[in-house]
Image 1 (cartoon, one colour):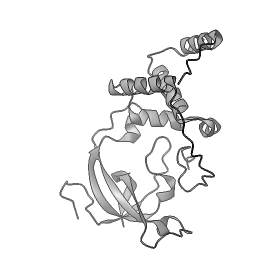
Image 2 (tube, chains in turn brown, green; image 1 turned 45 degrees about the vertical axis):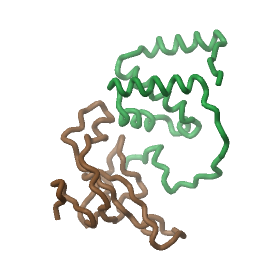
Image 3 (cartoon, chains in turn brown, red; image 1 turned 180 degrees about the vertical axis):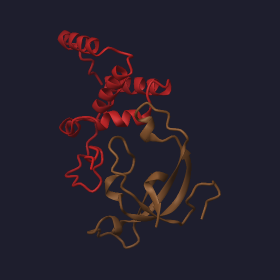
Image 4 (tube, chains in turn blue, orange; image 1 turned 135 degrees about the vertical axis):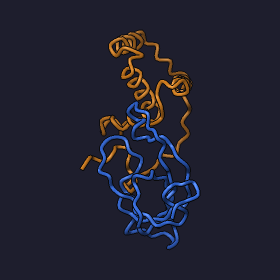
Length: 98
Length: 106
C-alpha cells in the first residue's frame, strides 16, 4: 500500500530492516539490522546522509520513516514490560516489505 | 563485512555512568560557537562531522570527550577541505602550548 506522500510504505506496514553491509557513514545501528517492525511515521524525504557525509550532494531526497520494533524482539534477554517498543528513524533503502 | 562504527554501541555494556556537574570551559564555549558558524556557512555539514568522528582510532574515541571530538573533527574537516594547512595548525598549536597560555579558564 502506498502512502499519501507517494512513498512506498504507509503507516502500519510491516517491514524488515536489512543489513546492507555498507562500509563508511550509515545511520542504521547494528543492533536493529535484520529485525522486524512496523512503520510508525513518514518523516518526509531527506538528502541521503550516506552521500552528504563524503561531500556529495545526496539528491534526490530519500524517504525517512520511524519504525517501531518490540524491545523483546531486539534483545533476547529483555526483562522490561511486554509491550515496550523502540522507535527509530530508518531510511527507505534499509527497509524491505515483511 | 565492514567493522561496526565505533559510535555504534547500542547493546554494549555501559558500565558505571558518572553523574557529576562539569563546568563548561572558555575554549569549549568558543569552539562550539565556531563549530556552529562554520556549519551554518556550509563549510561542512552534520553528516561530514559524524563521518569524521567515526574515523577516529577506536582507542582514541573511547578516551575522548564531547568537546575534544568536536574540535578534532572541526580541524580535520578544515584541513580536508583546504581551508587551513595541517603543518601550520600543528606549528601554531605548538607555539601556543610552549607559551604556557592554555586559555582553560572557566
